[in-house]
Length: 156
Image (spheres, one colour):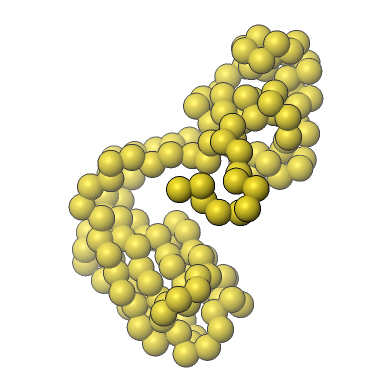
């Protein structure tokens, strides 16, 4: 990716409805050239999808929890079981005392309890530890302009 690609990704993260003419003008390209760049970014998987950022509370999903899932066996093959629970927004195989970390959004703590029960039904799950979020200060997308440190560290 070059600087123009990074700038296009940053602009689209701010507003994915921008016209190609506006994108091109912002980065010094024609509308057609901007369209071609965006198409190639999609083909390469840099842009995975175009979406709307909706307010979860306004949609009745105001309870956010992160759940550490403990297991008796390798959970790397269980993606479909976690994906089958629509309240789970993200699921990650992790290193450490737990095997999987999931991000869950529900409308109530009672609904969260129901999700935890269904997680226990997944083969191999032996325990969960949920952390309920009280307030979110901010969420941010990946900054396409921030270079990764050469040694692979977080740079912090």
